[in-house]
Length: 379
Ligand code: IPM
Ligand code: MG
Image (cartoon, rainbow, N blue to C red; front, side):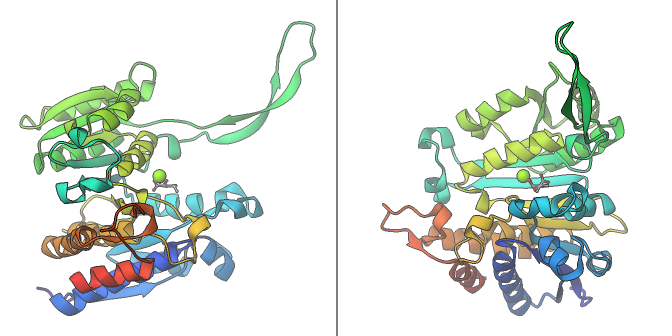
């Protein structure tokens, strides 16, 4: 193994961010010690934490650290109750998270949702709906679509009611869902390549009975699929996909979707494994000189209601750290070490409150830090 240090920018951020970051770093340190992986982890502020310390959600020194790192590990950003204190563009979700995505062109967001039979009890669905276990990867376009395209604004317009009734001013908000064929094509390739390594099925999700973007999406995805004859492609409308995830989750292998659809469906899929606190997220770009830069975080948010109480589930971020080792640092075996350690402590009954059943004697309620300790010990 190369002895060049693997540089990680660790941005804890807001809400539960610092607590879960502590545990993720604990687990990475265990990997470093036990498996001699040379990690160089540097922490820097982001989000409201950075606004408080340095006046902006993504300060220049934090961005500079990200640029010289091989990957970003991020806890969470955003505190909705503080939003009115700064203009919309300066709020952490836009000024830090979306900006980092654009800055590094992290267009491919991958969210693996896995429920092996040993964790079946975490799933809210009846056992017969779980089959031999749920194993889905949501591939979400993440630098375009509704969250990125312009115009995006709130304006005053004149509302014409009935003739004779004076017109009046009314607020009107605009978001834009736009995607180029190039954007669709490159994310489609990510999905087909992912499926090729898995069960060889892509479900492409859209709203092609209504949306222009979806009609183009369907055309381009179908075209790309010709290059992957071993992979089966099915198209599904997004509303159908929402129900199918609940009724027949085992029919899915890779789900490919636009930014907004992926945001929503990935969180829905997270419910299948018990909690959004279990779902990691990897946003990656194009490999350059054999290296793939990425931003790794939990799929969920900063959860201010439970922040600072040592009760948050750190597993999503710990699994995100595993994805980082796999995709950005090419250390698949070490990623598996982390994933196996998580599976082991869950199988042993360790439960943060979001996945703990009070009625189940085998469930062992633990805090955020105890969960981190248990996973680090299992490395
Ligand atoms: C997520 C989050 C973010 C996103 C928000 C906070 C901007 O919901 O990672 O799913 O949609 O990208
Ligand atoms: Mg989301």
